[in-house]
Image 1: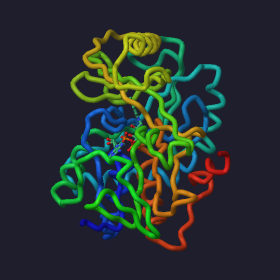
Image 2: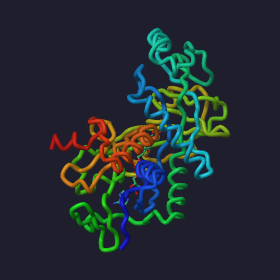
Image 3: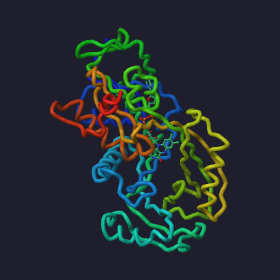
Image 4: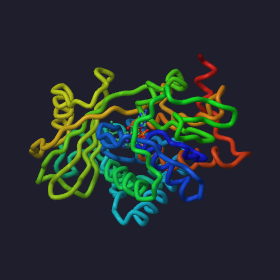
Length: 351
Ligand SMILES: Cc1cc2nc3c(=O)[nH]c(=O)nc-3n(C[C@H](O)[C@H](O)[C@H](O)COP(=O)(O)OP(=O)(O)OC[C@H]3O[C@@H](n4cnc5c(N)ncnc54)[C@H](O)[C@@H]3O)c2cc1C
C-alpha cells in the first residue's frame, strides 16, 4: 500500500503547478494522470495580458497574479532547463473615438502597462480604421511544453501515477481516503479540468466548460515584435509563424477542430490584417470554466478529505501560479484562509 499525504488528480496546468508548490515546500504527494493528449493545457495558446478583454481596466488581482506568474515560470525554466515564458508587448486595437479614455488611463491607473498610443493607420500590417495601444506585462507561456516537461520530471522522481482515476474505487474514511486497495492519502485534490464534470463530489459545484479553437498561420510580412489583439489574438512565434486564438463555443465539447471554427477565426483575422497569410495548423480543446468565471478552490463542504482546484477558464496561464500557491497554503497551513470569492462553498450555498 502506498500512503501519501496529498494525492493530486490531474496533471494539467492546475495539477502541475500545485504539485510544483508542494514539492518546493517538501510536502509528500503523488499526481495521478493518464497522460492523454486531449487536455485544455495541451491545447492552450498560452497568452497572458494585464488588461481585461474589451475593457479599459486592469485584470483583478493583477498585482498578485503577475509576480507569481513570473516567479513560477522562471523557477520552472531553471529547474527543467527549458524556456517556457516569452514576455512580448501587445498592440491592442481600439476604436479611435476611445483614444481620449485610453490616454487618461495611461496617465493614471494603467500607467504601468501602457507604453504608447498610436493613431489609426500608424501601425504596420493592420487594416486601417483602428488605433493601437501598446502595452507591456504581456506575453505567452508554452503550456503544452511545460506540462510535458513536468510530466517527465515527476515520473523521474517516482511522483507520477500514470492512470485515470476510477471514481468508484474511492472510499472515504475519517481523515483519509483510499483509492482501491493499493493507495491511501490524507487528502485528494481534484484538478481534472473539464473532467470534473464527471466527478461525483464536485460536478454540481459551479464547473462548466467551453470549447476553443486555435490556428497557426504563416504570415511572413507581419511584424514579429508584438502580440496583436482585437477580436482574436495573434502571437508571434518565429520565422513568420503566428498562433491565432481563440474562439468560444458551447457546442460539441470535444477536441475536434471544426469548419465553422476555422471560418470564424479567419473572418476575425481578415478584419484585422492587411497582409496575406496561410493557415498551417488548426486544433481545438475544452476549457474548464466556472459559472462565475472565477477559479474554484477549497475543501468539499461535507468531506474535508476532498478538495478542488479548477475553473481556471480562458486565463489559466496568469491564474494558475498564484492560486496554486494559495492552494498549497490551504492544504498545509492550519490558519490559512482563502478569499470567499474563490471558495468552492459559494456554489454549495446555491444548491
Ligand atoms: C483552445 C484553448 C486555448 C487556450 N488559450 C489560452 C490562452 O491563450 N491563455 C490562457 O491563459 N489560457 C488559455 N486556455 C485555458 C487554459 O488552457 C486552461 O485554463 C488550463 O490549461 C486549465 O488547466 P487544468 O489543469 O485545469 O485542466 P487540463 O489541462 O484539462 O488538465 C486536467 C488534467 O486532468 C486529467 N484528468 C481528468 N480526469 C481525470 C481522472 N479521472 N483521473 C486522472 N486524471 C484525470 C486530464 O487528463 C488532464 O491532464 C486555453 C484553452 C483552450 C482549450
